Length: 388
Image (cartoon, rainbow, N blue to C red; front, side):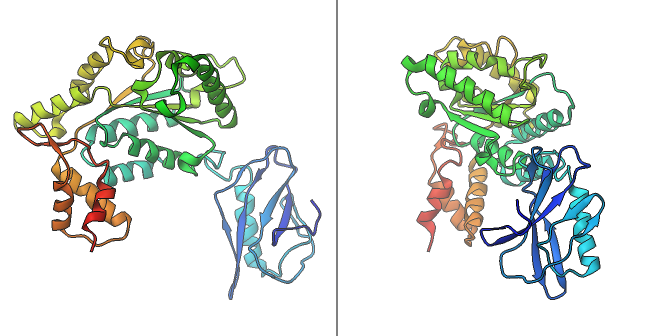
């Protein structure tokens, strides 16, 4: 890179840091203000060990002035620069220098691992799922805090459609990775979309193993989401079993820092029966414990059936670390989903409007009409009918 190179209208300041074994490239946005130059360290930096310099990207615009080279703290500044006030420059350099080699707490700025934000958003946006909130936060937090986990973390989400399984999976991705589900560290597979034909199963197995292995090589902490997991061919589940099992890390790729999520409607009937029994007994759904529900859920999943779970070795070999039950949603939960849908679009709402949206949903069983048959799945679309 030349000392006076401009890229797409941006001027670049190049730092050389030979004293750091693994330099990290970070982008800093310098914004001109009347009181000087303010440096704002952005979080979109990433490991870049193959170069001995890092780039400081300046904000667009014609900002005149060339400053002589600055020497200090093992850093040399190339000649493209700005007429900075001494204290302003030292503050910028200090922020830059302190961030060198450790721009992000995780060491990889694609990975943010914001468990506090995850817990806050689950509490505020996931309705009627006290078990899912507790299990997901504790499982993920414990896994991330373990320096050397023995195996990948495997979570299996179960419940009726619309109860929040996909919602939580995407929320998890958005709080663990800077780019959410669009991150190169996250892969989403939908059974009937990605693996529709059983006759191509051998090809699917090879492709799936290759994609998982490549993602793990690319990212030290990867997330794999399998939607409609009950429709996955048992051969696919068994093919990826080695990635989830305990391993001694003798190979080049460490599988143990990965997270696998399986989203399934299986077990929904058992979960709903338990919730209905509690309601009929006059007990609050919040009294349903994980210990009480997991045994019943596991028994249903182990029953002989034409699904990948029952026929694979995931259950038999205890590769699933946590079963996460999603309870059926009641009328007041649907109203909360409607409220969130209005707020997400910046629209005003009234209690009457929320009631109108909730009343358009189908509730079961036939006698009690207690649970929404679709959960909250179509609520964001239904509010369109009640807009002025």
